[in-house]
Image (spheres, rainbow, N blue to C red):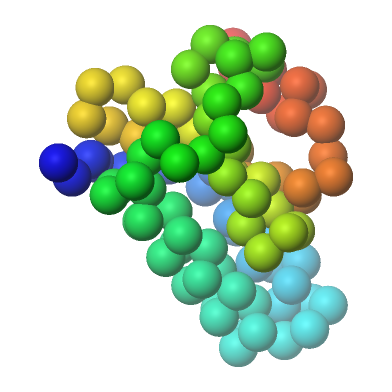
Length: 101
């Protein structure tokens, strides 16, 4: 079974912010390549959505997947849809980042 994968508005903002920062700190091709690898990892959730670590301690049904030991991809699975909630720095505390109103 293949799942649909979507990004929340906050996850999209996270990617835009990351790309802007990396473009300034490195260069545009590096930022583009890094985001392409993140997008591949996110897209892979369509085939294996339950591989991430359960984080029910934060939000019921939340899972996290580490990307290149630098980022956490926080997502939920409801039915046949995977929703990426946030994409943030791995050492960052997820609790305030996941406060959804």
